[in-house]
Length: 317
Image 1 (tube, rainbow, N blue to C red):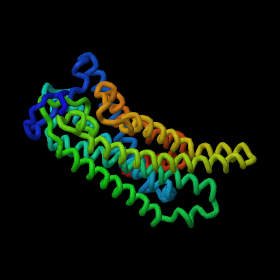
Image 2: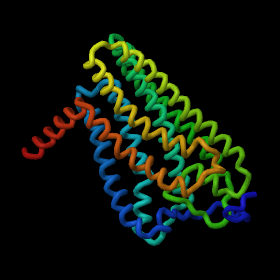
Image 3: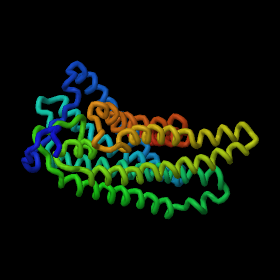
Image 4: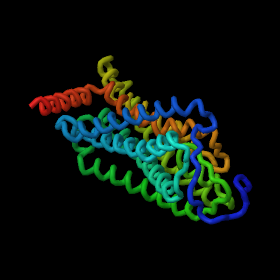
């Protein structure tokens, strides 16, 4: 029996209190502004990537199929969590309903696992582009890319479904306080019963969905590094580095917080420690990703200029 919240099971709670930074009132207004600006930038940046990837014929290669799905994932990430946080910061009632909380952590978990596999597929694409350039079009054909994306979405959904089925069966007792939004580790921590099955399932499944794709990414870049070292010209080195550097930065921004948050037993989960890390991977990473890809990618910048020119010509007619 857990005693963190209280010990009498009162059935499913009507709602949860989202603490946010209410314990630091002086932070609420600055954080509200930062979240609002970041959300607008994330929406603008990721929608732009999706549009140019779909509308520009020069960006119909496999890399941009994966990139458009990554941008859509980031768009959903921020929309799942940030609007609720903004509403709570602007009101005295800082709550979320039980059903709303369940939907939030279900979608959030689905998106996170899907993104792990999409990032691994992008690493595979970079490996083939650099190590097998003459066979790139044959290997990374469009049906294969669509199949990899479908596997990513379906696998993420299956993992989320398992976590939701186990989590909704947990009894919650007493005053239910969460930080910024609903996450599976925090929900398990709030339960007042034995959660050994939930703890083990979460760690095993998340380890599989985080560590296996990460191992494939590292393996791909090991082969890429070996191939790059064989290139004699400095121009070739620079081109190969430019091809991979954006993806490596995005992988680092996504995986480091995820490993810290999820690859530990939920019983050791600290809401105070997780408060600002959850803000980082729910808003900062999705906001930075489109800019990381556009600032170092001439194709995307060119496509954006062509799209803006088309919009401008349409507006002045």
